[in-house]
Length: 474
Ligand SMILES: Nc1ncnc2c1ncn2[C@@H]1O[C@H](COP(=O)(O)OP(=O)(O)O)[C@@H](O)[C@H]1O
Ligand SMILES: C=C(OP(=O)(O)O)C(=O)O
Ligand SMILES: [Mn+2]
Image (tube, rainbow, N blue to C red; front, top):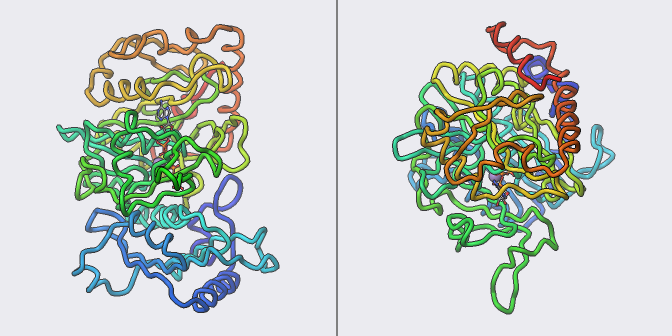
């Protein structure tokens, strides 16, 4: 926190930003730099963020481990030899000393892990964690500060494009399906996780993908399967030394096993990773309560309501210590990465969707036929059919019915999907349990949204009123 960021950033309740003063930052920075200097060698990556050439950011990553360096080599945009030759001064630098802890007696420290961001110095310091994702998601936070200043919206979403140039965004928290559903054999992949939406269209921030590989199979996800080859970083998987094969079903290290590969390892990646304005904005929720429909069409106010709410259920494997499904609300589907107040991003999204005539959808990739424990996760094959119908435009003209409580418009039929699963109530044996679970989730949404009832979303007061009314009603 400094004189500028104090007023610019979102601080306080609900915000991910925890204050730290300049002096403490320098104490941690010194610790990281001293540690890195004590090593025989360090790795330095000079790379880019954002495929939009007008808004490209130069980043330097200094790390102790080859693993971290290779990870960022895969995840950021790789410069050509010529671009590397003329790289110049980076716009942002990471000092990754993750093997070495911070000092727990340093002011502000609450554990031996600290990831520190200094916007004025354009530097980040990592101490006490070796999770490689901190680097990519840390830089994503930086983009959530830099891009809105240029009227560009940063998005925690996957993105792909059809052969006719129709672009879809896939918003969602971890485990909801951004990577899986944006990697679609029939469409061009623009990116799986971090994008920008400017006046010219969309651009990927990254140069690689970070896929979960628990229970990965060649049959179900052939493109991700084939992307795991020499150069890909595999994390936390179990490797059978005898048959020299990865046991993708083995959860003994964690459920959150990962593969980080350069985007060109996906054969139908769109290079450069840019595209026109989105036609469809798909909000993904993995609803472990099993009461949200597999798909519903949203009006603009509902899209904004659900975007600001950022609902999903954390299931085992998404975060440490999660054993039971727990409802979680993360503003803009990325509260951990946003730097400004959520209403700032929401206003930009509403404005862009209105201007470019994009349609919003809510897709539940979670449970059906009951909650987690009694029901089952909706089959990936069905979700893919639903997504196909959104892309093709056929779902836009389907017949709809409105649900009570959430007031969602659900289609009566989708090709390739059994009609009875489209209405969750049908799939539950115990109708009373369904109703009470629905009301329970509705209540959680209402509770969460109270944080935002005092805010105006953009200049359009009418839309703000509509957004406040677009939630569950009972
Ligand atoms: N119906 C479904 N839709 C999407 N993903 C599903 C579905 N059923 C199971 N999955 C699995 O859930 C996980 C989704 O994770 P991922 O695509 O990495 O999400 P994100 O990128 O949003 O974190 C994958 O392992 C995928 O195989
Ligand atoms: C958790 C991460 O991503 P995802 O949303 O794909 O799970 C991550 O990048 O660390
Ligand atoms: Mn992902």
